[in-house]
Image (cartoon, rainbow, N blue to C red):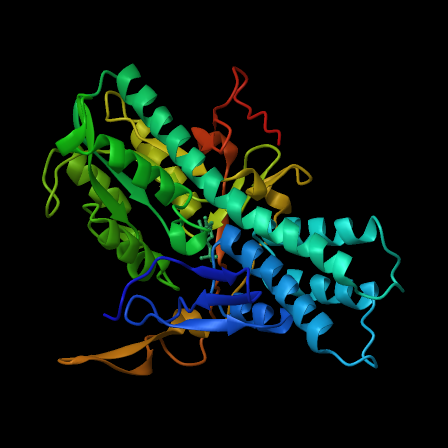
Length: 404
Ligand SMILES: CSC[C@H]1O[C@H](OP(=O)(O)O)[C@H](O)[C@@H]1O
C-alpha cells in the first residue's frame, strides 16, 4: 500500500489550486487529481472520486473558486464571462449528485451572495472572486471545527446513555458507509463520534466503568465505502474493528447479545451510528442505502423485553439539515448505474503489490438492476441526531424539533 493519507481535499491558498484524493483507487493506491474547472468537479463528484456529503460541497465550492481565479488570470479580453454564465455553471454543478443537501446548500449560498450585489449581465470581477473564495475557505474550516464538536457531543450522548442504563464493561458500535475524514474536511461525522469516543473511552485510558471495545463497519455494497474507506481510516487510527457484510448485522447483534465472541470481541452492540446526506424538518434522514434497515434492526432488538438496548444515532452538521423539506418522502434519491452493482472494479493484487485495474463481472449480464445510493431512516426509529450544537432527541410527543 502506497503512503497513506486521510486528506480527501487539498486547497492551496497561495497558488489557488485544488486537488482531491481519488477515492476510487483507495485503499490500494494514493493518488491526487487536480481540479481546475467546474466541469472537472462535476465529473469527479459524479464518478465518486470524491464523495461524502460535506466533502462534495467543499470540493464544489473550491472548484468555483479555482475556475473563476483561472478565468480572471488567464482569459483574454474577448471572453467576457457574465454573472449569468457563472450562475448557470453553478446550477449545472448542483446536478452532479441530488440527494446530499450540502452541495446544493453551499452552491446556492454562493449564488445568493453574488446575486445580492450583481446583475446577471455584469461581468465577473475580482470582488465576485473574493466573495466565492471567502465563503469556500470558511465552509472548509467550519466543517473541520464542527466535526470535532459533533464528536464531542456524540461522546457525551454515549456516556449519558450508558450511565443512565448503569452499563458497565466493553461495548461495540456498528457503522455504515464512510463518514470520516474521507467524507469531510477531517475527523468526520459518525466516524468522528467513533474517533472521539475511542480516544476518550478505550480500556487503556478511561476512568469510566465502560469502554469502546470494537467497531463493526459494514462493507456497504455496492460502492463498498465501508470495506475500502472506513476500514482504511480505522486501521490508520488503530481503532479495533472487524469488517462485516451488510447482511450480517442481525446475526452479529444476536451473537454478541448471547455473549458469544465474534473474532476479537464479545462486547455487545450498544450504538449504531450513521452519517446523513439530508436530515429534513421532521427528522427523517437520508443516508447510504442500508441505513433504513439498520434503524429497523435496532428497533427490533429493542422491542425484545429485557434485551440489550441499542441506540440509533444520526451524526450530521447543520450543513446537512434541510428545513425546507418536511418529510423523507420528499427527498430525491439518487440512482446510480447498474454496473456499479453488477461488476467489481479494483487493482490486481500481486505478490509484489498491486497491478493494473480490472473489472470483474459478478452478475448475469443485461439483467434488471435497482441501485439507489440512499434510503431514508424514519424519524421515529432515530434516537438522537447529533450536530455541532447538541445531541437532539425527540420531545414528549415523539417529535424532533430541528432548527439551524
Ligand atoms: C459525512 S458523509 C455523509 C454520507 O455521504 C455518503 O454517501 P456517498 O459515499 O455516496 O457520498 C454516505 O451516505 C455518508 O453517510
